[in-house]
Image 1 (cartoon, rainbow, N blue to C red):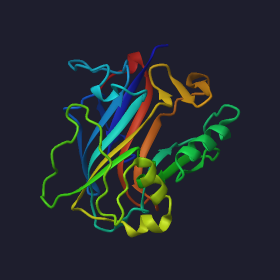
Image 2 (spheres, rainbow, N blue to C red; image 1 turned 120 degrees about the horizontal axis):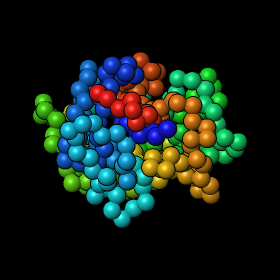
Image 3 (cartoon, rainbow, N blue to C red; image 1 turned 60 degrees about the horizontal axis):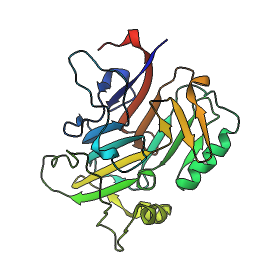
Length: 263
């Protein structure tokens, strides 16, 4: 059985709203538009060897990976609609529809992730496991700009450029991702930041922990082969409201058999 990685993005959990995309298209990000969010999304995978639909050209990697050890990136550039959110209302993370088959000691891995991301809350042993963190804390890089134009500004990384950290609305400048994470680990600080439609958010979530080419999870000190425990469920990233009333965008990484590849 030959398995291939397929990537889908869209505005909701509903599979009919998700579109299969190719990674590493820095110059042609996917445009997502819904009643709750408008933005570009670019997924990057190092050494991509996944699904390629007929007639499509694939890039195995991106200039974004030059000079680092990261394995993947989810970059988003867009606006949250509604003028009713605070920085505490919007979370980003993973959820699953069924219980997970987890290796022994998984709680240690979770503790490591919670040390890295102090905002992370999770229940990985429930019937529908989940792990979410405030987007202001969990994102590896954030740049906020103010733009009152009705259209979305041009995509910010056409050549794989990295985001330069900047949130100018704050009284005190946060000069680094670690300073931002520390500041927004405080719930009151998150609540004081109002999310409005004139804000354009550049967000980048990335890490070196998931190797999609080897189907492995790598945490400090150990590596776990995913296939031994995989039960067929996709890895799903969701950006949504904390109360789950609104979904802003969804990114799905799924493994499918090579003979299943189709539109």
